[in-house]
Amino acid sequence: MTSPRIAQRGQAMVEALLVLALIVVALGFGPASPLEQCIQALQQFLAAYTLGVSRP
Image (tube, rainbow, N blue to C red; front, side, top):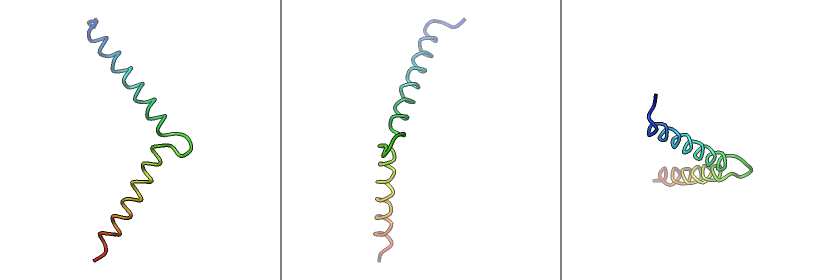
């Protein structure tokens, strides 16, 4: 049998994974989600950076 300490550690890991999954779902879904906004901002930044670097 597993010791109570190992069982508690496993339970804490499951709880942490559930919280992380809920955060990802909250950030990733919905109209104009924060995750989508971050990706778009990064794309715009990289496009401007590439344009600036490519000029002599």
